[in-house]
Image (tube, helix red, strand yellow):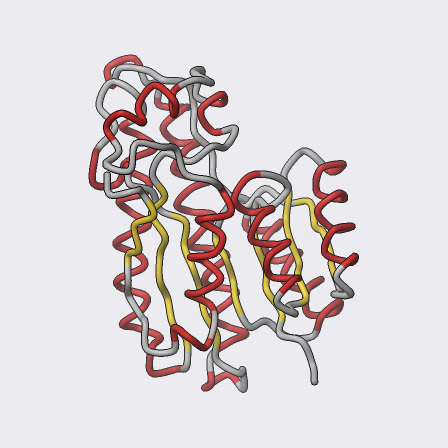
Length: 249
């Protein structure tokens, strides 16, 4: 039986890498993109192959339309189909008050987190849609609890991009649901990833866990399991959902 194919953007580390490995364990062939760290992407690729699944890695800046077109064309050649997309690639910048955010910073965050997710979803729909002779499929967008919290005094720009992802998820789910494609989003809370260090505060998650009802930081694997459930047949009637993985925060 032919394995289904999953593409994960930004999967050289963190949640994306966890999704890639879990998918391979569950019998998926996996393609993943990375922007800079090829060696880490190759490590993930090796772990996928250790489970006997096909794995391909592609360098790409998801905000670059030409890069995305190239990745999907190569995916067509390498794997021949696409059954699920996880729009995981994204950036967060240094903690900053709102008034200190430069226009360049705001544009960069929106271009990668929002424009990149739009471009990848467009290419995925072209391949999955029943009306285009696809097999149907599933898209999971990476949002964040920041979309409803707002992240004041930290990264309102990042939070705003995730609000945009929520809206895109809701709209696209309604637009392509009749074409065999389910679109959902996962909204992680405080998760033990490098994101906090990227924002300039490596201890941020531990410092804020007191505000989580479960009184602990989440693990990337816990988010990965939620994503894999959403793309599985077990979630066959779940469309347009915004699934919080936040410990109740």
